[in-house]
Image (tube, rainbow, N blue to C red; front, top):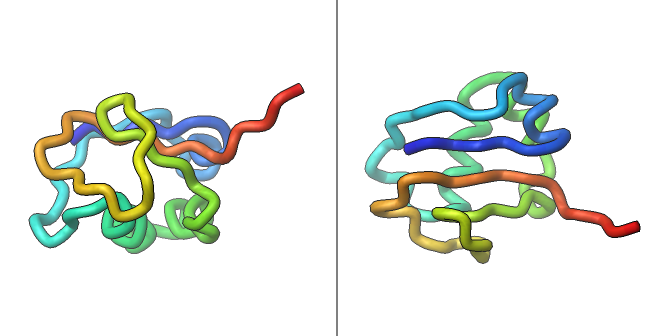
Length: 83
C-alpha cells in the first residue's frame, strides 16, 4: 500500500511517501495509525496526537475506523486551516 504524508506529518516522518506491506491485522485507519507509531521515533512523534490526524483512503476523506482492505493509497495530513 502506498502511504502519503503531508505538511508537518511529512516533515516529522522525513519522507513524502512510501510503499509498505501492511500486516493483515491492521484493518482500519485507526489500526494503521497505531501500527505506524510502532515503526520508529519519527512516526511516534508525527502521530503522537493521532486524533488530530486526518486520513484519506484512495483520495476520499475517511472517518476513524474506516476499513482499509483493498486500498491502494492512504494519505495522512494534519487538520487544514483557512486564511
